[in-house]
Length: 443
Image (cartoon, rainbow, N blue to C red; front, top):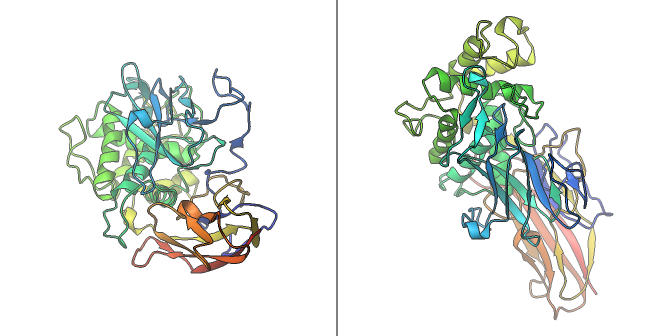
């Protein structure tokens, strides 16, 4: 996909989308995953005509069943509101790992944290012990996370939760201002960038809106095979170093990424164990555990994937293992963005009106439905969005790019200017500076 600016005058919307060169795009509000009233159901829950929901699956290459799912609001600064009284919805996962949570606050607009937690009777299927001990206990202290990058009032599907989306959330929260002054937070752009960096660290093309294939023979959904190999390899690492409950290892991944943004073993020990947390960027560690141990033809625990004698040279699995056998540093994953602006050349507004220059719909770019924006007009980001108005007293810009006409504004034409560029000093995102002028006609 080239670095092009597309102006669609027929759409009354404004979307800033910063994408990877793969042409993927974001599920904030995409047509492929947005469903209207009374849409098809997941599991046995019917969709009430007046409800709005978030749904997806929770998987570690095996179903996570009966887990607690809470939708938490994300504040303007990218921090998470952890007050249960402010939760936007909650539910539990089905036996196949699928969840569907109805929003209790239908007026909410913005990012949402999907928090999955354990408790009595909550279990997850581990592909590395699929024969001897398939179901591991997800205890109250174990959590997994993902994010709805932007909720705009529509049903959202494919908000899938895995140990790797949890790492992306932790990395999003880890930044301490040392990289271009960016402080941590779960904003749209921050989460999108971190998802791509985590994917690259593990040799994958993406981790969002993707479900790993069921390598634990647990009845879960999912078709992303390479994703499943990575998680199976991580599960094998946990087994090899003596971790008996793989959820302790998943919690370790989260905490390891949370303290400094990297999976470098800096937390010392795997939670709830005396076992040292490994540096997952070490050459051959993960690749060896996957290829030589999990994929060993004599490994009776393996229920998914081929054995290592069946891996063809140059195949996707062979390429993955080669990547995992190299020394890796997640901080070296740098992304160039393409900028796509969907906006009318001019807006006709009346006094007192607010134009939500956010997402109403998103046209598909390329063949994928997993675009990762690297910035947005609100929250912490490595991309800077600067809005200005030719007359702020008459036409002003509020949070998330809301164009607001004052109730006492003078009729006439005004200009709203948006400048987008990588934040100075940061090292993770590259791309050109783009400037857009939007004519606002106040009637």
